[in-house]
Length: 231
Image (cartoon, rainbow, N blue to C red; front, side):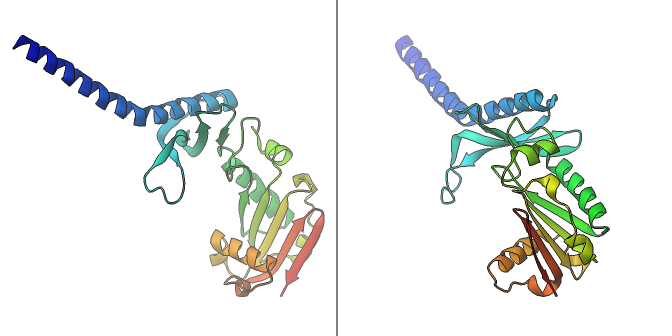
């Protein structure tokens, strides 16, 4: 009888161990990613943000709920700002964050509002890999323009003075930065980024899009050249 009790205890302990380690196999990567993300922010920006949750990276679009447990995105917050940090557990050099995104958009909005003398303006920017994320050596807005080479700026305006657009000086953003300015016919279009992207792509391919009838002028600055389309 004692032998049976002892054997049963061993089996129960083994079962608990299996269940516990199986659970840790799912939770440990998320916990580690969160820890690494906080250390990354402390080293880069000098603060440790709060951690909201961690999303493990997906293997592919058809994977359903399955995720790779070697990397993920930590959703974080600090002093009212929410942002993300991407962490690879296999490669310590792969650390990206988008903490600077609001600072960049605020800077660009002020710059173009003044340069174009336009009050109704919205800015959207893409840069970095993944999109709008930058590595540890990019710590300021100035660093983005100095160290990122895939920057595209989308500027939406209403009531744009065309002469201001033609005379716009964009040299401080670097010759590799692409700038697209679209002056819309109404304020309703300002913050519709899907409409903006569709319109720019449509103009690039010489095709008509939903946005073609909703803007009055378009200016693109790329590699020192300026291309315009005015109605």
